[in-house]
Length: 429
Image (cartoon, rainbow, N blue to C red; front, side, top):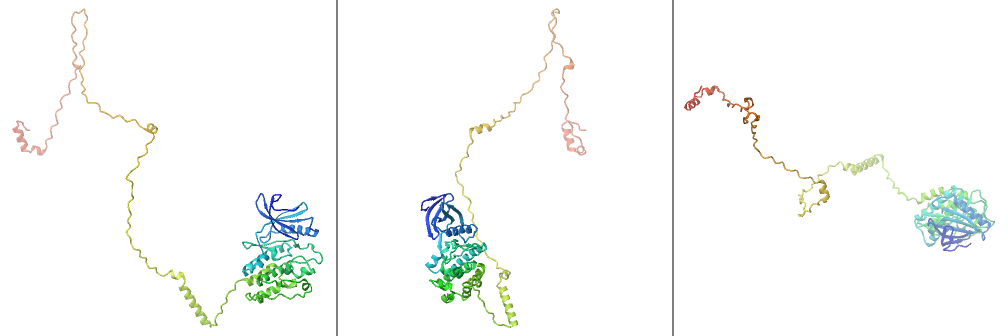
């Protein structure tokens, strides 16, 4: 079954073609539910050989157990309709091969790429996986500078049988280790480190370590010349790079770096910024002690802690008169909002009546009428008023005499008062 752009496959829609290789095609697809863009690698079992199918299945199993930020992740694998399909992480970027062909990469940036490749290989080697095809074409670099190692189709786990026929060369010849070409020993992690060293050599010098047209016969007969020291091709490189490549590109795997971490440590020592070493003059002990003492005194004098102890001059701030203008109020005051009539009727109180004092009236008590007793007509006498007994008449209270002033000693001796009394005809006692 051939796929084409616009076709739907399960939950995926094919949106483009990314490339084609010896083991199948790679499409750009989008998941309909998550709308995530992925890469779909397809191998048709109808045209593929049995060895290719086994290598494809091996790549499935290898990627399924690898999870590293510098390795392209496997999302899913499908086996149906006589096709093997890998749904992998879609990486938008350029291959390192394209970047090297376009021009020289800044040295520090290229070294940063190499370090990420070694980190990915260190993880894969710990999982017992050998890539066996580390080339610039299988290294993708994103716009953020993140490296992704791809194409584990030739990868091999420790102990797995080799899927290579006699005389068959799989991989890129300029970056392959001699043992991969000879077939005498099985490739291991040191073979991947040899390929990384060849990529690093090309980055620093602009040339492949064994020339653009490497031949197989010199490799098989061990007559291939050693690569030229990188400092001779690029005089700006430090001489410390020469022994690193002499060891990393050695024909004998036993003489190379034995792990990716060991290779990383060697690169870190060379790529680290140099520290300037200032030679000290030859001084006597007394002169050296005096120089140290003077330096301490100068350092203390310049110390901010010493400067903080100095008296601080007072700060003279000119006194300014501040005039605060009174706030301006509007002449027109809005009338208060009158409450509703119902609210006034509910809470209004009836006016209290004014208390008016009753007019002063004289109370006259009339004497009771005279009682009369009707006489019998047989008496033939007219009715005579009945005399009121004396006990029934209420006599007015006796008049109370005004209190006489008390005679004092000085009153008796007052001759003027006595004379006045004599003139008025009163007799004074």
